[in-house]
Amino acid sequence: MASPVADPLTAGPAESVRCRYCRGARGEVVLDLGLQPGCEQFAEPDDDGPDPRFPLRMWLCAACGLAQLAEDPGLPETVLGLEPRSMRQQAEHVLDRLAAEGRLRAGQTVAEFGSPHGSAWLPRLRGRGLVPEDGRADLVFDIYGMLHEPSQSDALLSRSARLAPGGLLVFQMFSLGSVMRLGQWDELRHGHHAYWSLPALDEALGHYGLGVHRAWNCPLAGGTLVALANRTPEPDRDTRVLIEAERAAVSAGEVRALQKRADTEAARLREWLVGRKLARRRVIGYGAASRAVPLLCHAGIDDDLLLAVADASPGKQGRRMPGTRIPVIAPAYLRRGQPADVLLLLPHLLDEVRHSVPEVEECGGRWVRVDDVLAGRA
Ligand SMILES: [Zn+2]
Image 1 (cartoon, rainbow, N blue to C red):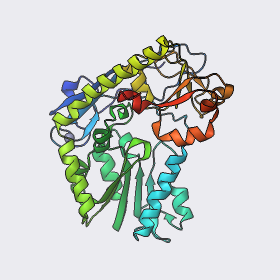
Image 2: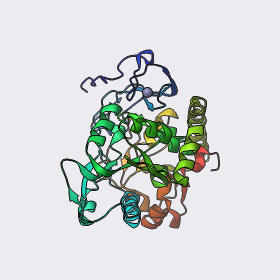
Image 3: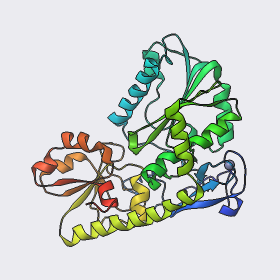
Image 4: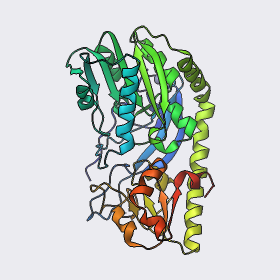
């Protein structure tokens, strides 16, 4: 393993962290998940580990309110997963809504700031008659792009610079508001540098002559924020309510509570798996998702408690869950008829997997949603 590239923005201890947006130095670590492997670093089958681990901490800027990675090892983001159906549906849902509201029309120019997650939206937009543009565009999409940018000020500048007069900037992001609303401490990961709240984003956009015009939350991947920004923002009532609700939810005191939640939920998962083992019940995970990695590692779970994790992505099969010896197997393995509790690490996929792997329940097994386990309901 080559030595990781130091993060130019925040290399060094937390005391020397500089905000990725406002460059402020005043802030605090609000969530510390200890040393974690890269959550996309699924080692090759012949690599027995141990996998390198790096500090994984969230730092909250006292000046601008941006929640961000305190430090980042600079791991390459290699996405081995398939784009889930829900991700494709989400894209169409957003585009349908924009079209219905008259914000997206054939003939408009469009630009996209992409990300390593899922497919780009440009082909969809081209399919709707929009014209890709290398310069300024009527519509600028940022689909999980911002959070991959180490410098948020550079990122906002480059996006605002691509916006034609009267244009609309469309963000789809994991927000601090969603993290807080849903208690998703496991959204924190290396490579995802920024977790904006809606009020903090609105204020930051103001420095580029922009503001949040509309915003709404979607259930995708637990919680995803869609925010529309323009140069003449007139947020409607729903958007103003959302901004104010987030303002209350993202204070340092509230965000600090993520730590207790992380520790409690990790302990519950471990307890549940130990209980299953004592009951001589086999447990196999489903969904080798990035966000399962901090959870399993924070809970100290290995293959003595979780036999394997099934995942439909061929790129992950045959590898290990990062930081563990837990093998990733093909979902076909679940069709073999041995009853097991299948711990669904991606709870929103329940309907999809029930349909695609009916054998689990047919042979006396059951699906157990990880969120039920973490909430103490399983
Ligand atoms: Zn800041």
